[in-house]
Length: 184
Image 1 (tube, rainbow, N blue to C red):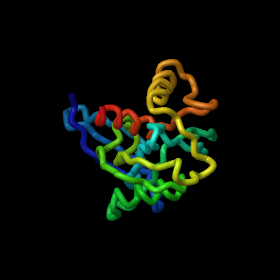
Image 2 (cartoon, rainbow, N blue to C red):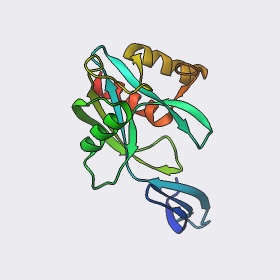
Image 3 (tube, helix red, strand yellow):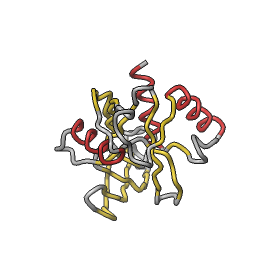
Image 4 (spheres, helix red, strand yellow):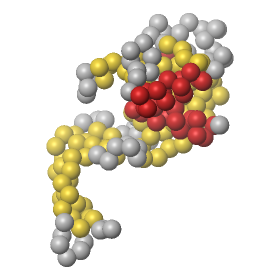
């Protein structure tokens, strides 16, 4: 296995949420093999697995401009690394659902390992909301947690939409799998 070193990097686009770069990695052996790749580095992302009092998962329809389609997503947000993960999780759930997050727990954090062209630090938080006490945002959809795993399995295995003709987005799929692995 070759060892590679970053030998050149040029930022193509820089904004407050991400940096898109063109990078060259060169092997340290005699043949100096090169890999040229575009890389996107984002601020950390917090995805919040939210269940209500009946173990129903909160999902929201979200338009994804990169592919021009609607997906279901669990509440998520990018944030500044100096911000509190838990505070950001509470704020994004309130903003997106109009519900208060309770009993929040940080499940995991770490790099996104599914996309080799993205450098994303994914924080996954789990918490509960009381939907019978509050009026959720009209966009909120509730999916029984057991059904959510079945629907996600069919999406992954058979390319079937998650619910109502929409797929579950990538970060949300990762977060739901992390929740299942860590909590069960």
